[in-house]
Each structure stands twice: as C-alpha cells, then as structure tokens.
Image 1 (spheres, rainbow, N blue to C red):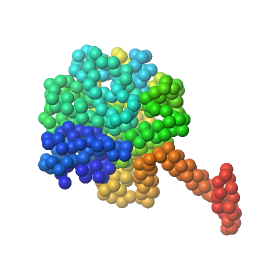
Image 2: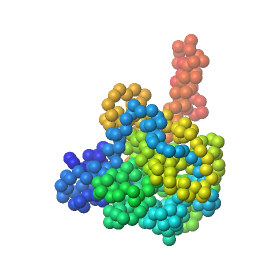
Image 3: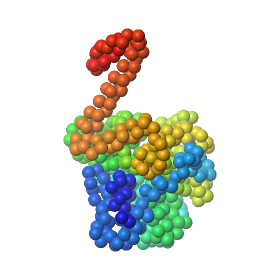
Image 4: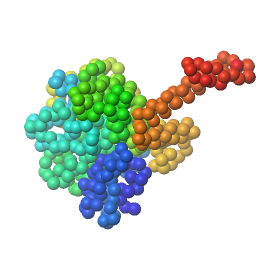
Length: 426
C-alpha cells in the first residue's frame, strides 16, 4: 500500500498534516479520532506515494545507532551558546530565554524575511494550525510552549503558492523534516527558508487538554486558555496555568504536567533520536546547565548551518550570550538516557537486534500508559494507575529492606506500614 495508511495503523503518525497538502488528488482527509488528528485516505487514491515520501516517519530508519552520543543525538553544528534576549517584555512572556521570538521579530522588521508561520492559540478546541505572521503582526500570542501536534498544512500551502517568498519556519524535529521533504518534493528553493528547530522531549496528544478539563479544581468550568508552562507565578521553568471563561484562573505545579507526559506521549516519540532538532539552521530549547540558572529563563542555542550562524551574528547584539560545550549540553539534556530508545525501536520492528528483558518491560509499560490515555475519564484512570504504581513500588522497597534485615529468618509475616499491607520475611 503506497500511501500513509500503514504509518497511521502503526501509530507512527505525528499529525503534521503535510501529507494532505502534497496529495495531488486531494484524497486525504484529516479526521479527529479520540484525541488524535489523523489522515484518512479515500478510494480515489492513485498510490503515487507522495504522502508516504513526505512523511517524516522515514527519519526513524535513517539514523545509524552505532554512532556516538555526539553524532546520534547532537548532530552537526558550528557553535553552542546560552542566550537570553535583552528585551524584558519578550523575556517575561517567553517559556525560557525568548530567543526564538527575538530572532523572528528582528528578521521580519529588517525585511530579511517576508513572513513566519507560528501559533497564536491556547484554546485547543481544534487542532493547532500554524498561521501567517509578518512585520505588522503582534508576536506576543505566539510565545510559550504547546507540547501538542501541530498542523503545518498552511505553511506548506503558502510555500507552494508563493515560491519566491522568504519564510521562517519553526517546529519540532519531525515537523521540520516533513516540511523539508515537502520543499524537496515540490522542487522549491531551500535558500528561501530559515528553519528554527525546537528541542522536543515527548510530544503529547490532545488528551492532555481533556485531562486538565477534568481536573477536580476546574469544577467543570469552561477553559479559555491552557498554558502548559508559564513563568508568571513561579519563574522559570514555569508552572501550569488555566484561565476560564468566567475570568477565574488556576495555577498548578509543574509536577502536574510532568506526571502525565508518559500517558499522553505520541508513540512515535518512543523511537525518535531528534530531540535537539538536527536538521534546523538554529536549534533552540531550555538551558538546564546549572551555571546558567536564572529564574527569568535562558535558552540553549545550537548554530548548525552557515545560514544559521550568519543570521545570529547579524542580530547578536539583542542577546546576552555565553558559550557552552557539547558535553555541557549532552549532560544537561540527559541524552545518555536516550540510548534506551534504540531498544524501543527494535521492539517496534524498526531495527533489528537483541533486546534486554528490562527494556521489554519498560517498553510495554510505556504502551500500557499510552493505552490508558484513551480512556473517557482520564483524570480518574491516570491517577488511579499512578497511585497503584507508587504503592507497588513502595511494597517492593519495603520487602527488600525488611528481607535484608531479617535474611536468616525464613518465616513470613504480613505487616501494615503507612496503610499498605506488605508480606515480608521475618
């Protein structure tokens, strides 16, 4: 089957919508299924294969897993920096250092680029769609992270119909791969485009929004805006903030977002090695290097291509800048832990090779959590699972501790600790 149907059935779709744009017969429809926006191919398909070719899923098969951590996860680059915009208004409203917004603003105002395709919505009633912005646009609403699948269909449609325009494109590694595939297949001039790549560690599906709608403290109020991260109350790295249509708001600790990531993760993220956006001109993300700690937030900036370096040099007076090393970045972004994804790729059948029992257990635990995220009552299902998981972990710890202390006595006894019954050796 020479279309994207198999990719969807394998749960590898990233919901970027680019396949719909490139289809010459316009026979791909994006439909909402549970908490996903997935392409469906009609019977008018002529099996030209363009949708499968543009899909970034092919990137999963291209990485050489025998490479060093530097090559596999970091990719090629010219320099690694820590940066923070000097514009306090942009910085206050940003997720971290405000670098992406500052770059885009400067390039549009200087007429170096004609437009940018960005997000300006925090409601999530429908799938997020990139929108056209030029130098007359207000970029304030484009700031802050969404962590959800974004449709890049509009940006691709614009590039196809305005091939001479110079466009800034921003997105996760998989999204930029799809856009670059589109540019190649449509024979567009790659020099007309600047790729700003966002660091990405687990994209979530739209069930995450439903989860916060069901949060007991929401009290069934209608959500107007949901900010997965905002520095307004606690500073960087930020907490969750929900604004309701009645004018009230709710602030939740960042732990509330972190605990649900494994449940709403897109399955494709379990096999991805492009956290640092290796194909961008400039890659951007939170800076977690301890010596740069700042409640206002700072960004890690990887200048990858000559274009990226030239662009940044052109506007570098707008930033406070310090140099970082590859080792600093790899350590702070915990890239060594990503080696486990190679094991997951083997279990999915994307790679061949032996897999340890521990990896198999972790993999199936991930899939179990993803399955739970399809529940209707998300809040109850997830928190019940977490409570059970924590209880099982505590039982295991208590058994181990008491068994070591009483290893010579082979009898057993049930005891209750912190309200939990545990069978231990005595």
